[in-house]
Amino acid sequence: MKKIKYIALVLLIASMSCTDMLDESPKSTLTPDNLFETVDDAKAAAMGMYEGLIVSNESPNGNWGVLFPVYGWGIMGTDIWSISVANKGVQSRFSRYSLSAAESQVRSNWTDSYKVINRANNIIAYVNNISASEETINTFLAEAHFIRALCYMDLVQFYGGVPLRLTPTSDIKEDLGEPRATEEATWAQVFADLEFAEQYLPEVTNPGRATKWAAKGLLAKAYLTRGGYPVGNYQEPEWFDKAAKKAYEVISQSGKGVNPTTQGDAGAFKEYGSQFIVSGENSPESLFELQFQEADYGSGWGYRTIAGGKRWDNTDYGNFYAMYGGSVVGSDFALSFNDDDIRFQWSIGPYGLNPKGRIAKPLTQWMPNKHRWESIPGNAWKSSNNAIVLRMADVYLLFAEAANEATGDPNDSQYGMSAYEAINVVRERAQVPVIDDTYLMKDSPFSSVDLLYGMSFQSFKKSDSNYDGRHVYYTGSLQERFSAAVLMERGWELCFERHRWFDLKRTGKLVDFAQNTQIAAMGKLGKDALFDPIDKSEWLNASNEPKKGNQVWPPSGIQDHNIYIPIPDVEIQINPEMSQADQNVGY
Image (cartoon, rainbow, N blue to C red; front, top):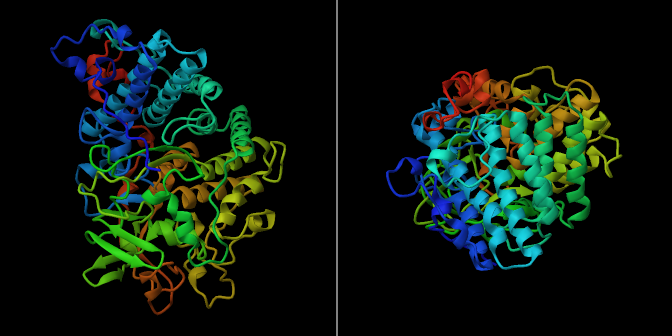
């Protein structure tokens, strides 16, 4: 069934943002009381919240519609993905860590987030005025708390502590002044909102709207993130305990799991990938998915795919269209997948397109291919591809990470299952070997270290007696090795879904991985790269292995302060409770 179509809400209480407040028009006094009289009024206001997540009043770049999938906020600037070397324009600034406080996309992200927060605040403040049952009113309240938490969770991860606006912005003279809260206080508000939401949201609802399980899953992620770097810095184990317990509630009670794949089937990669295309949207694995409709409510998901122009691939597993991509996948990451991993076969595009069809590309040109198009939209930033905010594979990996941090032993099952059991649900679906103590404690059998993650080029030689399709090995204690393994697993499973930047920041790896990723060269896949499913283990050069290149990875200029985005100068200018002293260090 096609998704709910978000409706534009032309209500003064919903549309105000910081820059709107500067307009010299009669907007300083609002009277929203009479706008909440019926259930239909509340439904319209709720739809306005969702609409605000995907459509911008500030620019063409709605957060979830364009800023995240096209400009790469939360995804690029990592070891996984970047704007290409040649692209030095506006869209490259998140990747290259060159954003400034005056940047329009920074202002857009900030003001669009607070616009949605204000819409949620209006529902929280006035929905009790409608004629409806207590259950109905609590559901609307819970939905508003969920959306507000989602926005504040993004803000605190991008900017650190932010002003906590918890009541409707209705009077410019009185409501703009709000001091910058600490990160701890901002996270506390996220927890409060999600804890309310999980209590009153329904277990099942229409696609695209928040549920109890979405709230619990997001709360588990919030707890985990709070315990990590830089706030908890892994010194407050209670957050990992809370995260493991909450994630297990979703795993054990929601009735949801990962979408299955057929073991050994050549088409298994399509079974995995179907959830990322329009015909497979809102799959049983999905917990919360933002709904897009081509044209006015379209998205940029799938825009940055295979470079080479608007063409289509006619395969045994479906017909997929490609667009000018302008981005590149980190060679270390692309090479790191196990050679049998069906997620590589779906998510990574090691080829380009020309009038004769696919062409094998060198490593410098590998591109994302996860959010594929089944038809080409009229506007490349306005497709019908949904944005998956949370799905069950994410929750299993959240549990695995949290349980390992809380117990120190991935074998410990005190939370209902072990960290090993959780991560292996995801790995078995990907059709790669399961992880256990023996797997983790095995040191690399190869003598050289050539790439990130300790990988050796020797591991790609099928003629080597140690070749088994595995390329990443770990060091340290069992707990440390498992922590590194689950971070890699999150990359392989969730790449290009707006997780990696946050994952690397939480684990303290963002600067290291972004600085040390390489763009390899002198090597490309053989003829099997031209067909689905892709075989990554055959190389077209004399030694049958990839080689190093000398191009600079665009995010490698990251500095320590870049784990935060600059607070937009417009906020400092118009908020009487903030000054330049509140700006993040380095900006």
